[in-house]
Length: 370
Image (cartoon, rainbow, N blue to C red; front, side, top):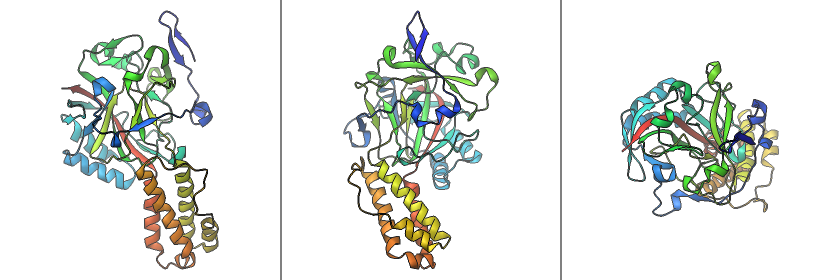
């Protein structure tokens, strides 16, 4: 960390090389209290006040059909991405705070599908396509209103056009927002966590940061370092997530300043262990390796007392399903390896394992808050 501007006292986090970005030891991992919006009666986050809101997508039939295809396929292709962008553009999305977001533009750049394994387990690597992106591990906001690429694309006009609140300047009168639309296809583990911006001390805890984009975006040389924000932890910050979400609801949050990142829930260590065991057992059964299946299944199925209780009901249920399938395979491993009932068990095992892999779509939207 260093002083970015001696006059204003603005702070900057150092830019990390690609190998350090992928190393968990590069990050300051903290535990914090997070409120589950699914269980907070009457809490209706409002975009202008809290920095994020829930968006109702249920009435967009074409978008819903495309989202279901993406969820079931486990990846997004160009045709479905185009269908989703087309179905959103021009729509007025009802927001949880009572306002509506009039979607003016959905950018092609920044349209990603992310996959993150339980307990921080990596499921892919950064890619220049729309798929293969891991869940974000760093608490961040995606764009500095004064930085690259907005500075080049809008010739320095972004601070006057967009609603934003930065450590050294703000524009709280504009109703034109640059937001992320985030849609959880599956988030039993590694859910999106969002900070209530009212609890953030921007001068003390918000840092400028240069993110190298070579591994996941195609950009010209003067825009390859993306200017974003990262944040220091403070006990007074308030965080929220939703344990119960489906494709009928998304989150919108301010690209220019809302802190967010993926959260590791209590209980995910157990989910990771069961995921690895179930996948290894399924692979052994599929290739008819009875001895290998027996070895994998021999691991104790009792609950390790060192593992904490799963934090949410969906996580608890997902772990129970995996453990039930492991117990079923343990009781009939010889029959499964001979092919007796193997097809049905393998289908259920794959579905149970995929249930604890966080999958989400995110995209960058320009919209008016009405």
